[in-house]
Length: 101
Image 1 (spheres, rainbow, N blue to C red):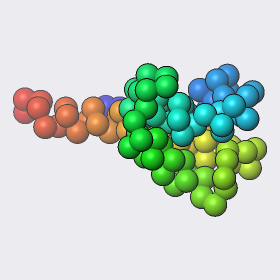
Image 2 (image 1 turned 180 degrees about the vertical axis):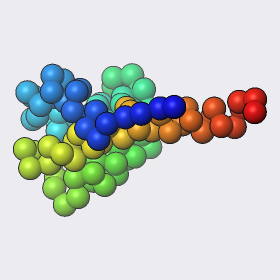
Image 3 (image 1 turned 120 degrees about the horizontal axis):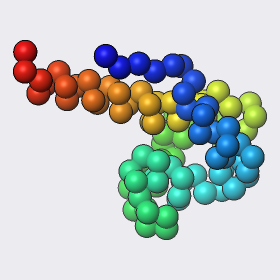
Image 4 (image 1 turned 90 degrees about the vertical axis):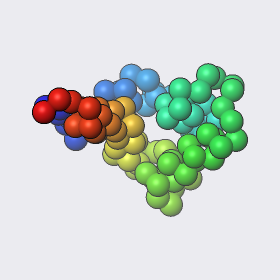
């Protein structure tokens, strides 16, 4: 059994990025996005990783150019999906495939 709550991602935003939103926006595509999604070391993200990070950002915040107070829920959703929901989903998938029944 696995479980998550809707806004688990807010845990990270509350102390990591919300206080310095300008820097977060300036560095999301090159640093924070690839680091979060692909564990890319700072400054070593590939063009493909940066492109995917930008696409994910646009998916979550829609027509906005940057994360803002108006997109706070979108930021929470992004972190909830990437750090909590996807790992739980993938774990359950692997468990279902390889567990002995």
